Image (cartoon, rainbow, N blue to C red; front, side, top):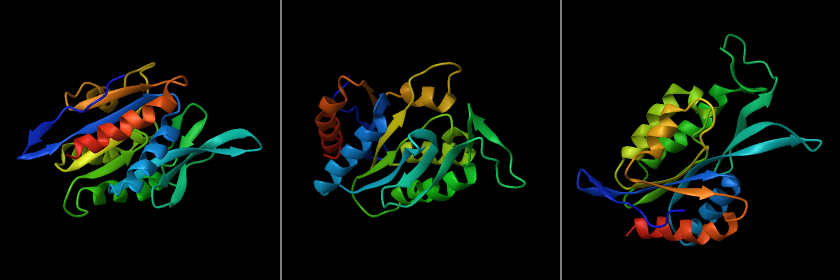
Length: 199
């Protein structure tokens, strides 16, 4: 587990990035977002959430921090007519729905007023990376002075994801390895790291 934040100067402006990986990431990132908002820190972004039916996971939704929700993926669903099918295991990814919700939030993070802001990106994973536009916008967001990214990346398994590995290896990234055992104790550390990054 890493605590603190590495700063880097680009264009005279300091920026930092915090990234989480492991088990219980979304719950932790939602709690951290709520804690930051209650401390009057400007926070925007999105998270992914399991969709269950009859106790069984049938897919994932993308949910903006303002509460707008749409499908990210569903088990065995068909892609929209005329659209290419993107699949991760049994899940068919709805790239169009994802882009319609996530991209405006990320783009607005870079233009929403003075001062440092926190941009939540949960998750930068296999499903989301079917969107080439998302990859470009993540690069832009990570390079924008005044934005602190609080995001999640998956633990490496199987074929490496280029953007995930690039993020993991950046010198301005702090990675917290989230486990079932430490996820509750990490909340305060993460909130403190983001708040100290804003100074």
